[in-house]
Length: 186
Image (cartoon, rainbow, N blue to C red; front, side, top):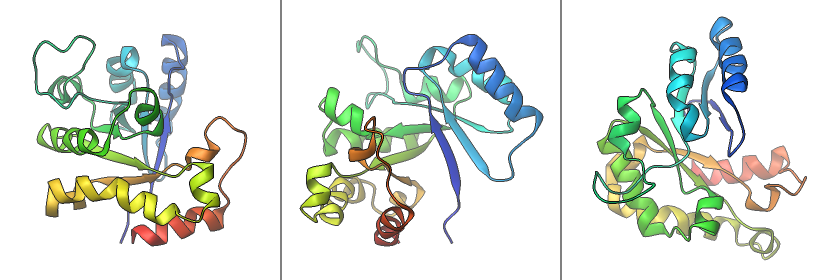
């Protein structure tokens, strides 16, 4: 049985005031389902404090490295220490703008799990890939390296379908389209 999760990636939006308002509301009236929010790094500690366990708090990325001279990187251990419990890995914007490939994404998934974080692996296709009818092939490719590296531990990875063609375009995946991709994951 797959568990249902409602996740909100704030991307590069937010403020101290917005974090206080949104998480104060969620903490006061805990949702009936599992919820995780992914605020920008500067608001993570505040979010953990305000959520009071009512919702899960996650980071939008983590380093594949445990520690070292990696300016701007944030380790999984650091995220876990401040109370984050989730982390997004493989988001299409990270793949596109930071040229993250499947090997790096697999290493990040492994690092997240080693640090006690639940990784959310983002998979999805572009409009061109959808129109060519290769959605399942693209997603299978995105899953192949992590599955090979993690083996049975891959069962601890949460899968998130993000239709790349819908991000920032005003288009949305229909329920039928999303269900078809979710059925492929099953």
